[in-house]
Image (cartoon, rainbow, N blue to C red; front, top):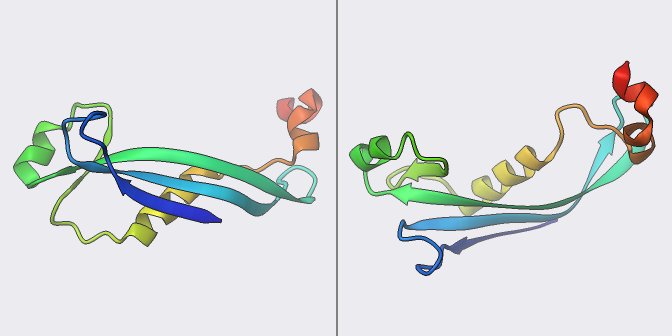
Length: 105
């Protein structure tokens, strides 16, 4: 598994922030048949950083992820969160995912 955190380019957004990526594969067990399988992950998110609580509150109705600048969050925690959000709540192997009878059950 590879993960990275990079600053947002000013040409992409006027707000300060990070681009968090997670890429690789995660070993899971199929919820339907119990088979082990590897789930490929290639996920990326942008997290904007507010200077203080007031600025963060002013962004509440915006459609992007944001955190307060004084929060102590490590790059590892950001990558872990990205990975966790990429894993399905109920994992299914490719065979079960493709079987419409299993999806209806």
